[in-house]
Image (cartoon, rainbow, N blue to C red):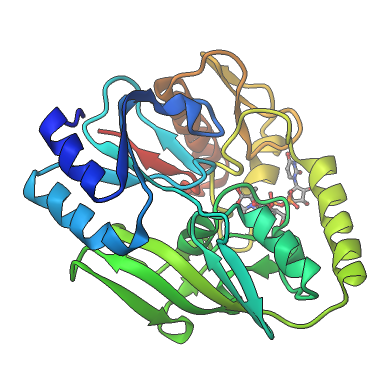
Length: 301
Ligand code: EPU
């Protein structure tokens, strides 16, 4: 999807930088994704105007955060990618409250809070991605989820065309799922975190890092776990038990280290990855009668 020069000029007045013809493979941890124009939003206070302009011009969009949990289609994409620029002062702490911009890096936010003696998020340290993405998915690891810490979220709601503040208690945070609408755009979050000495938090962070390093292919191109765990079960264990580690479709393969991580070992396309996902899902269905649900978010045309 391409933005015309006159529209790019109007967007520039609203603090939006347009990058033409960006390969989204350069924006995702899987290094898979087609080409489109990318809009970088630098002014949070103009976001409602930007969104209304795009709606009037009938430009479809998707909001891309850290790009770490998304599988994007191949070729020319039929929508533009929006991206929130992060500011230098995107995080601050007041007492037990942390105010964080959605575009901030999640690991950076955990560390920032730790340095202010605020803990509770140690488990999230190695989860790649942005704070906004973590909110949307209710990111979790090692017994920690972000949801219970959320007190307020400022977001742009496409449904009302306005920036609104939602109270944490009014948001449903389930396992890798939330009540946010697909076209809600996270802007800021207020978290409430328990006080804990930095040293203790650091010790917890180290334990989580070690566990993650021992069980996940951190230095390979992946989107984390591909499937959600079925109730009471483990997708990774089932795929492993079926002997599918190393199973390959084109440049996409089941990780040798963790069977619920599918990695890009060559020039994998989205089609390769979808082929692998479909084949593994079928094998698990045949063997266990379980229908695995995607954990990774799929954005095709
Ligand atoms: N297992 C195997 N073989 C494998 C992988 C796992 O036998 O190849 C077994 C493990 O030995 C363990 C069980 O399966 O007994 C569960 O594995 P693990 O502890 O690695 O956790 P997981 O359920 O596979 C979940 C999250 C991860 C998160 C970890 C740690 C999901 C889908 N995955 O993985 O999150 O990092 O727990 O808390 O909920 C993600 O969201 O992308 C993600 C990676």
